[in-house]
Length: 102
Image 1: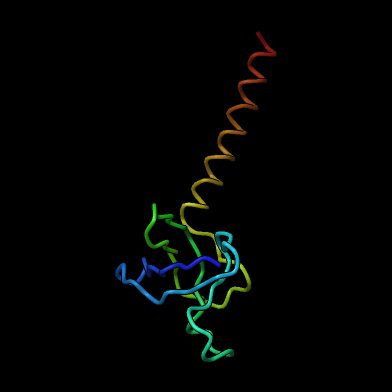
Image 2: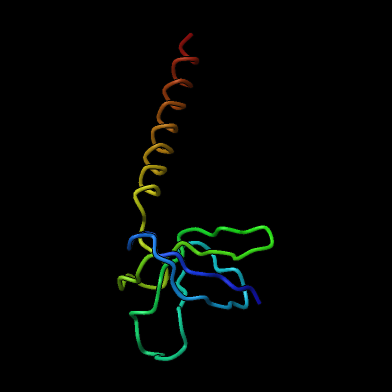
């Protein structure tokens, strides 16, 4: 069991509830901040990052659940990475075509 403190980085960098989880949550999945209301979606958060502390508290950077399903929607960083990857592939393709012509 691992204990994490939630950091609501999209809501003014506020510290939230402390949760104890049986496993380390993969990035983009959902965590629930308390077990009081099983049907409440207001306590569900997407995990965007994990901060491991040396001998101290561990933190999860979270943002509110917005009803997109079981995994988080793409962030702006995800979209930028996809654009860079696509451009890299295109540059490699053009470089290969040029080297074949030489």
